Length: 219
Image (cartoon, one colour):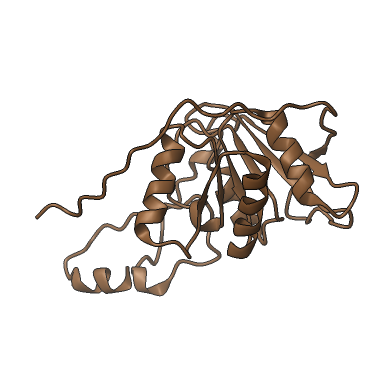
């Protein structure tokens, strides 16, 4: 961005957009006396429910499995702080028979593209991901955001939750807590702690399958 702006000698108007506020605007933007337009003041209330679940033992993976069975085939993103956690959860869900995809920076471009295609078209209802998917990922009708690991900052929380309850739709965010986890002060108001029903069924397999042909780029 700094390089592009430096090449535009006659640039007179600069418009910066963001889902979160910066403490200060970077000097290279050339913005000195900005006019702030905060559309959140007139926006309708976000239709987002925020709930928390606490593992009664050390097994958050089992708590996650129980939650996914409760949600059935409703589409959702599972956010983790690290790639190895994504892989560990994927291994568990494979063993439990829950069809899903994974998405993180350790995958090559073709693998990430295929994961998004399968998630968008309903072949996979669940996508396990790092915060790579919290910014710029436009997938409509995501109903659930599951924070398997507590987000590190308020900004990360905002971007994760921003994947659901979009365009006047409603959604639910879930915060999974270990037995000793504490809800950070930046999560305000704190999510409501609830309990899941004891009797749940394994989600039904999706009726869709994806045929993916990678034919390269057009000249």
